[in-house]
Image (cartoon, rainbow, N blue to C red; front, side, top):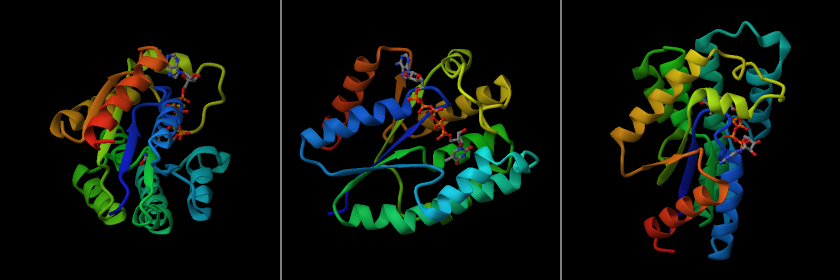
Length: 207
Ligand code: T5A
C-alpha cells in the first residue's frame, strides 16, 4: 500500500514550515513514517534550480516562461528521484508546496496560460496527486509583515498585488476541490492550527 501525500500551500509567511513540524511529530506518534520535502529543491538538481530561481543575483531578469519551466523541472526530478520511491516504500510524504504553487504563482500571478501550467503539472507530477492539501490562508499584508526583517528572495520581492492574485487562486482551487483541500485561518494560534490539521489527518486516514 503506497504512503500518502499531504501538501501545504499558501502565500509566504503563512506558517507552512512551522505546521509541517507539528504534523511530522503527530504522524510519528501514530507510528507513521514520513518524509518532508520542499519545492523547489531537495534533490541535487532541484537545489541548483532553487538557487537560480530564488537567490542568484544574475537571474533577476528571468522571464515568466523560464520560471515556470524551472519549477516544473525541479518537480519532475523530485517526483522520480524521491517522492515515488518513498511512497512505494510505504512512507508518507509531506510537501512544503507542490503543483498548486505553480497554478497559483505562475498561472494566476504571472498570468501564464492556465492550460499550459496544468499540462506541465500533470506531466511532471504524474500520479503524485496529494491525498490532502492544507491551505494556510491569511491576509496578504499580514503575511508580508511576518517576513519583515528577513532578506527577501526574488519572488518575495514581488508586489502586494502579485500575492493577492496568488491568494485568490488558492481560494478558488480550494473551492473547486473541497475534498482535497482544507482551508485554515493562518492567523489562529500555532497550536490551534496544528490541532485542526491533526484532527483532519486523523479523520481522513483513519489513524
Ligand atoms: N514557488 C514555488 C512558485 O512560484 N511556484 C512553484 O511551483 C513553487 C513550488 C518558495 C518560493 O517559490 C515559489 C513560492 C515561494 O515564493 P520558500 O523559500 O520555500 O519559497 O518559501 P515559502 O514556502 O513561502 O516559506 P516561508 O518560510 O516564506 O513561509 P512559511 O513556511 O509559510 O512560514 P513559516 O513557517 O516560515 O513562518 C513564517 C513566520 O511566521 C511565524 C513564524 O514563527 C515565522 O516567524 N508564524 C506565526 N506567527 C503567528 N501566528 C501563527 N499562526 C504563525 N505561524 C507562523
